[in-house]
Amino acid sequence: EIVMTQSPATLSVSPGERATLSCRASQSVSSNLAWYQQKPGQAPRLLIYGASTRATGIPARFSGSGSGTEFTLTISSLQSEDFAVYYCQQYNNWPPLITFGQGTRLEIK
Amino acid sequence: QLQLQESGPGLVKPSETLSLTCTVSGGSISSSSYYWGWIRQPPGKGLEWIGSIYYSGSTYYNPSLKSRVTISVDTSKNQFSLKLSSVTAADTAVYYCARQLRVAANEWFDPWGQGTLVTVSS
Image 1 (cartoon, chains in turn orange, red):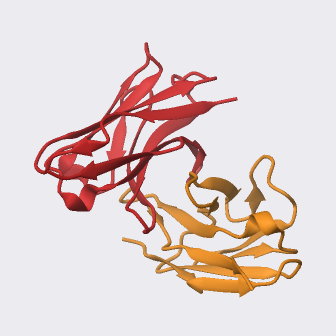
Image 2: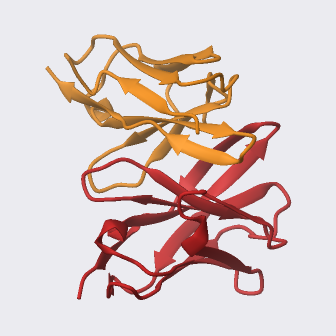
């Protein structure tokens, strides 16, 4: 089973600053990685798929990069609505298995 | 705009079977482009994929839950369903349904239902 590890567990950043969230896979997942944002009491929302493609309606301040085992989600200038928990998710072809990272909580500094 | 809505009992007794239905509106569950998935989230914890189904009935499950999970589809009602047997307190979670896209070797979920909390307790 591929294990996804996100770091840090909690990130404190001031509004207007840049936030960089990391996701590491225990073995290569190529570019088969997605990022989600989850606010309290809400369902997750897709931000990024294919490691770097923004989903429909996602602001350009969100960007994803990486391939293989190391991935990054960058939020270029934090807005108040961006403070939430972020999850990465990978798909492994065989055995077919979808796994999520444990999440990074992005909080206001 | 595609919407998904989970429904089912909010309380299930230990050892019984959890049953949930996801109703899809604003689009057809029979679209050849998508799978349909179930994901859960224990209170205060992270996300766990349970399993997925294609409109034809083809399924694949999380190996850790496979022995207890059945996912089915009813295209006439534009619904798909989850059954999880022999539940324990560890199965207490918010259960989400979601549309699942599979492109080459990539898979992701969008959009998600609002989720429904299922508590396992006597």
